Image 1 (tube, helix red, strand yellow):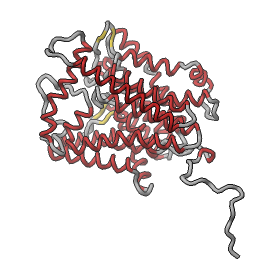
Image 2 (spheres, one colour):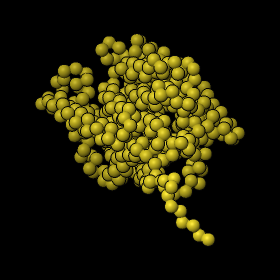
Image 3 (cartoon, rainbow, N blue to C red):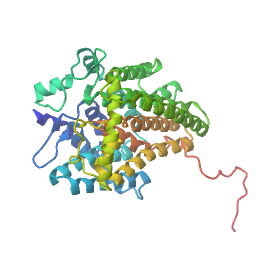
Amino acid sequence: MGVLFLVPGIISLIFVIRGRVESAFLFVYLPALLLIPNGYALRLPHLPEISAAEWALLPIGWVALTRQLRSGLPSFMDILIAAFMLSSAASEVLHERVLNDGIFSWFDSFMSIGLTYLVGRRIIEPGIRLATARQFVLMLLWLGPVALIDWRLGQNLYGVMGFRIFGVDEVQTSIQLRAGHGRVAASFNDSELAGIGFALGFTVNAWLHYLNRTRSRANLGERFAKLEKFHVPALLLVLYLLMTQSRGPLLALVAGYLVLQIMRFKNTRTATCLVAVVLAVCGYAGTVYLDRYTNVSDPTVTLDEQHGSAIYRRRMAELYQPIVDRGGMLGWGRLSSPTVPGMFSIDNEYLRVHLAYGTLGYVLFLLIGAEAIRKPLFLSWKLRGMEDKALAISLVAAMAVFWISIKTVYMGEQIPQLAFLLAGWGQSIVPASTESAVVADEAAPTRFAFKRVYS
């Protein structure tokens, strides 16, 4: 039955061969990515395990790669992504105990980070930006019934179906309970990751709501426009997020919501400075509170499960630091990294990257995060069209949500693909029309400017 997971890849390939790359992206890859768990995967002989969404990604990614190679000089973000891929390859090949395992681990990283970044960079703008955002939000909304089952019964429908029908045991059948209810995991196989996915959907939906509120020429569709008028998609995505009972993504969404307020101001730069100050103050206050909250003499004595989880993350960072230091420039490799007894779950992606890929990979990872926010933010200052500005701000908010959230959880399942797809999109925003041209550095000449005439 596992061969069925190859079907999205076959359909995607047919679309690509017929020259309909955008259709393959919108109607095959995005639904597979958001509605099918990453654990629904097929491993062919001599190949790594590839999920249904990744099979659909391969033909589209090849087109994106060829477009990238023909596009001329790379951007700073392109260079950072390529450098991170090379750095991680060196870490995996040189330090994994089994060479094939290292190669397969790197290939998975290349698929979920490098290839999805290229797809976001070269496929979406400007022709299918509206269709992409709409499809992204709709697919997340369709997870509602599954989320309700998770929350009410404490069982993951995808895990049960995967085990009984497809023989898949990599998707959990039961989920963690908190406050008497299941923590929603849906297609993401983890409540924290599901929270990140719903929060990212909220930030993308903010752009759609802006288009609908300002009555732009964008056609959202009659039914979807009515839903946006009454904030239904945004409210549902927040409800789904609350049902995951994940504090990290929820706090990250608060930061993302503050970023989204920038689009309400005419002077984007001034608004950016105000929001940055508010975020800095809130971040400092949160850090002080968390330090006091987790500063206990006996880590075995906790107030509740959430308090114990916070203390675990603090001790994890402290105990893994000596191992990170011994890893040097290239780290230990993803699969061969030493583990602290009793702390096999590393719920901090920055720590995981530092541990696996060393100082070099860690620095590149931080630079990628900074550039993922800087580029669309600066574009929001330069673009004239309000539709373009609002899109840039929405993607800045999405990046803020992601890079804050992974401080409290690992970057797994579909989340790397979602995040780097949006990161690539944020690097490629162009004016939607000639009326939305980028502001020139020098003022344009006036109507009556003198002209130099040669006879």
